[in-house]
Length: 165
Ligand SMILES: Cc1cc2nc3c(=O)[nH]c(=O)nc-3n(C[C@H](O)[C@H](O)[C@H](O)COP(=O)(O)O)c2cc1C
Image 1 (cartoon, protein in one colour):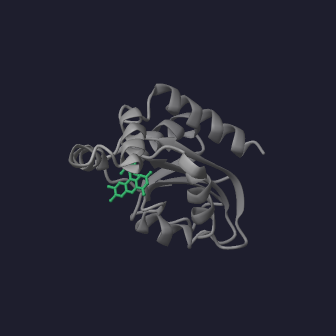
Image 2: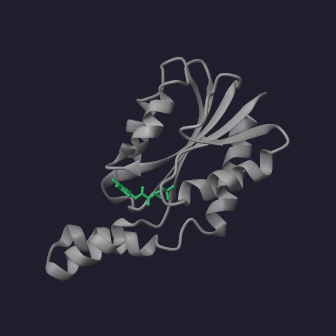
Image 3: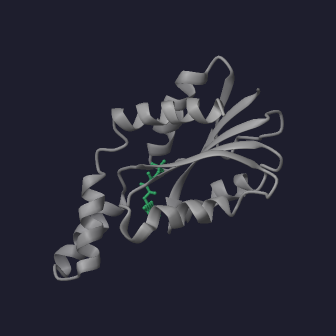
């Protein structure tokens, strides 16, 4: 099995998870940050994206489209909580970007800090009665120290399990 860990990151959260995953499979894997990653010489790709407006970020979407015929493990990081089945909607939209002949071995989201927190605090201060902003702020505040050590351990176990299937 030839394994590539590829990830995209803007503020470092996805990179943290990718590095933790790589740590437990490094004897048999290569790690690359987008856009400097190509899946060409690998049969299995572990791909980390970050969530941008409820989808994978643009750079990740372009890479997902190149994964025809590969075994794929997906993970994403995001700032929001799971209100109204939001995580399922995000996962579905990301999986829809994969070529139809991929074999998806697993898909997991990790809560993470976000630079959107400052904007939400400001919006909440301006209108404390906006229930939607209040709920979003609560979730983003709760995620501000993540991914934490437990998340990283979870990611390592999740990937080892997915690869053994
Ligand atoms: C421009 C922008 C848009 C974002 N949109 C969302 C979003 O729609 N939903 C969400 O849950 N998090 C959103 N986030 C939060 C990021 O997904 C989260 O902080 C992620 O961990 C960033 O990954 P990185 O640190 O690897 O760049 C957004 C962040 C930015 C900067």
